Length: 457
Ligand SMILES: [Zn+2]
Image (cartoon, rainbow, N blue to C red; front, side, top):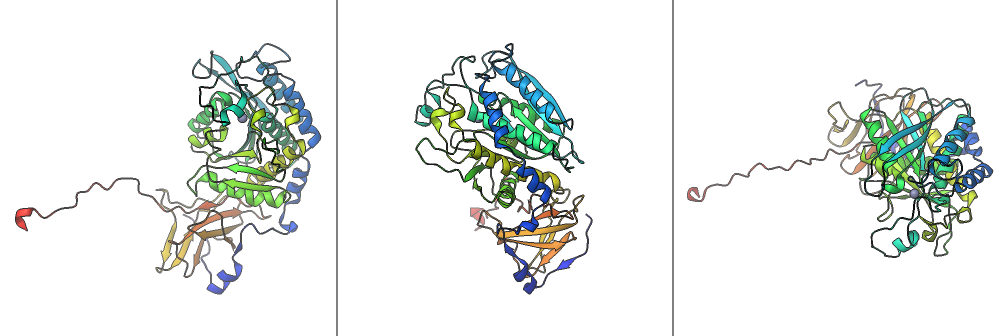
């Protein structure tokens, strides 16, 4: 491990420098090129994308692939062509699989994710995603959520399933960000992937096949921002919330997905202060799932964006039309995604805080001090240390420590606090925080406790 200048902080310095995380940063801390990029998100374009997606009548994975205007084939070709004409910088392709008849797949079917890649300086990837397939079920989702536990009856795949919110909203957001990022002229460190998945409604199959392949090919996916049902702010119960978005992430509390979620709240709300980010410490809503979970299953950090309030009566139903979506609300969610994806892609890679054997590089210097080490991240010019009480969800304190890979915090018990470190480049782009995780022994200690034989007592 390369170790830079050793930093020992006095208690006075520690007390003064630590500040509560999430405090609103002065505007000067924001990168003007990211501010501009976020400002490029267009409500008018999002509205036009939704209208076009609705026009295919259905985008069911098993609907007709032969019609030029209706069904999955027409939809995927239009998404492909639209992405391609945004910019020559976007490499657009079909990510194609042959899925055999099984479960909700009622016949062998060709499934194509549509992906647009914006190459960065490095191979590490940041994904923004949605699913372009739609579905209709008997009674719609409101009957399911109302307590019907009978097996789901799916409508004919060619029957109407406009899927404007589920998940035309996530797809329009993904496509609009592909345009905005590719046309921004910004050179990113990470490679951005704008991914429109298919076969989500049959069991996250498009996402699963892609994640499986990425894992097998050792592709480094640092973050997946999955957007599914992000266009409506009016609950079916009449409660309206146009000022926030929900972000679901799987645990445990310092999993890569949880760190990504914290980062989304921190940077999303700095660039879009008019929109709240509500973090939820669970993989998804009760008994429901989305494509981010498929990435989690292959070990990638991935979270699910969900609208603030849902109207179940329009989901998985012919009533999932443009009237059930608020384009200004969708645009706010797109801006949060844009800010976060840009910041992760501009920032250095998050620091590595374990040895080659996986041991966390944190210890109790002189018994009562916290001593933290990390490996240098390429492109970093300084680092920021974070900590919080070991019973609490959000980072409570942060401190810039300069260009070093080691720090000692006097009289700071590593047993009572959680620590993490982020890499920062010369202009302030900050990586996701890498936490120090206490090693957990999962092996059962099955060594027998020796008992003195009765006749020897
Ligand atoms: Zn969906």
